[in-house]
Length: 147
Image (cartoon, rainbow, N blue to C red; front, top):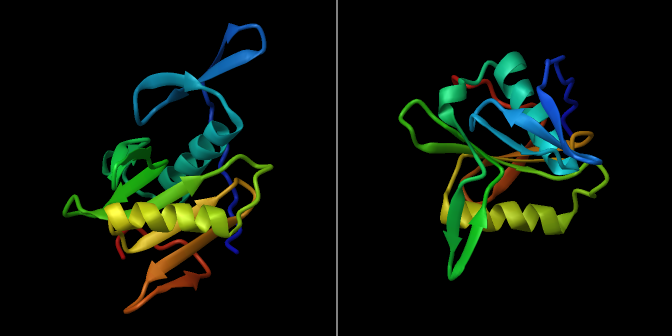
């Protein structure tokens, strides 16, 4: 498991209706519903931007992919300097367990869009994997962007 220390960030949050809030997504440049999963995604994005120094222009959030006949959306994709998919991140709500079901989900997404790195996080736990010759292997830290 990778220990993540999230940086402080002045998130923009607005109340849209009683007991409902939106958060400003700086990458998508739009307000999105602030769900527990979205909170994890926004904090993880800030970690990649501020701590790991990944460039914002090389990230995509919640884009549609085709899995056979199904339309799915990945949570976060990071592209390399050649604009090729490099890292796929699946975010879950803090209370959601990161089990084999979550890992299989991100592995299926990888079948549609092959990447070098897979990451699953629920905000408290974070697991990352690098593609080896025949399988993905767990890694102890997230890679620097220039790797």
